[in-house]
Length: 225
Image (cartoon, rainbow, N blue to C red; front, side):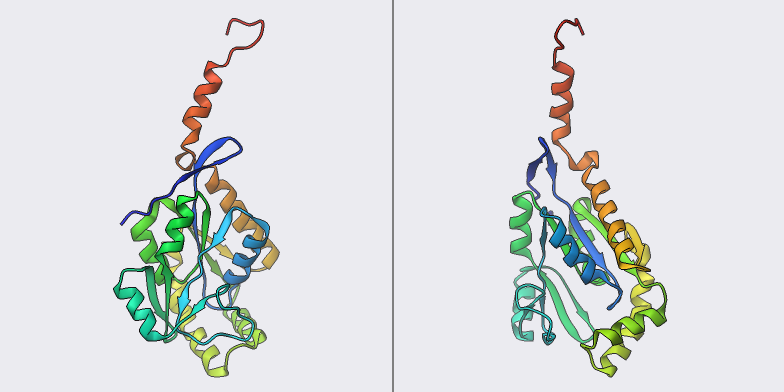
């Protein structure tokens, strides 16, 4: 399956949207960076995943996730209504197909806050449109501090997340870019720079052919060139 990605106009030049994937071990900062991108860049739409895990106190239904039962999740997966799905920490996560395809048809950039398993499936389905970024913590001790400071998971859950983090970190080699989150402001600025560069790739700007051709054809007053 190839995702359809409509062309849109920005600064007078048609361009294809990008599908930005942010992944990291739990607590390394990907969700915070994703939220800041959405707040500062109007060209992004967030792909809201479905999940079977319990909602945290700070999370809002339909904004952070769509929280559903396991039976409903399985039905969606069997109906091929998910672009990707994965089991993480004993819970199921997936990306609904319909809203992503609708946004790409409208020429918008899509943001995916997903783990490496989901990223791998997405790469297999829409590699040309994907920009993948892995966020690493500066140290494992700092990752533990951040998970504890968040105060949203039990000690058992935090221990499980830290065990899984080592396996997740090993997947950095599968991503286009890696950002080490020493400092949130710096990490966010680096992700912004990646987005800016990827939006300017010639392959993502089909309108350049027409634009450059129009420049060649333009006449200058008083000059025979």
